[in-house]
Length: 325
Image (cartoon, rainbow, N blue to C red; front, side):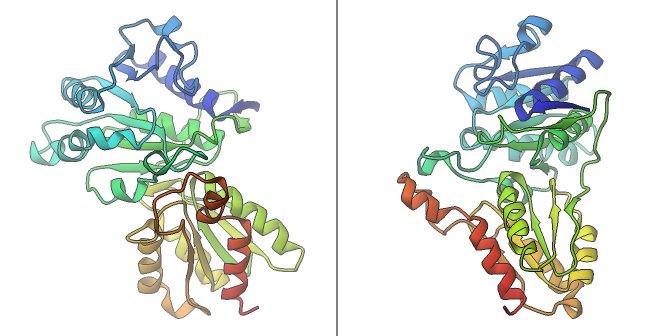
């Protein structure tokens, strides 16, 4: 095993797939000459050249449309958004063309595209640069949505996404690009749609994904000191979702807390809550608790931002609530 930063795992996954398949290329703002806004494509222009690592204008709608057209023609584009907040400019191409083309063409066209970049808050970036869109995109039939939380998962899932014949939304985090983790030396691919039990426990299940799952780890360590055993499930893939992993865990612990970095209305936690009450209601010993951001635009003030974002104490409080402590 070797230790890589999250950004290095992303770059390694893309580079390996571009060496394996000449139809794979990368396009986006600052991906080439600048080595990526977050250095997630460092060195790729030198290796693959300007025809396969392409700097685009600040025009998300335009280059998203180019990617859809090239995918219809047999290419496998990787589109980097500097942030998924900017994907809203190109969302018509993602929702109305990339996601629907296979169905509308009666299966004549596959659309093997990966749209990737950071999601969620990255600190004091203000209301228009701090939003999470995984539930938006997961609401769209035809799209797969992946939100990894560490370098190992990021590399293995990104390679799977690039090889997938359907469009994949691959969401990262500006605050995770420097995170380090062990990654195998040889090639490996992780299956899309399979959750991972990051920590086994017996008293309560905590389901989360992306960078916010770190708060669950911190909470579990604190709760363990009080004799409370927390099982943590990292969804990794939002759509298709691994309902079986969640249900099996709830049937064991009989309690569920869901942690996500998104607004509460129509969120991923809303879907999980429905699935559990529909399929494992008799196993629940307490009402399901969910933890989200506050139901307001993200504040700029660091004091308010700290209150807006879920944290370790929120998880601890929710776990104790479902345990009636």
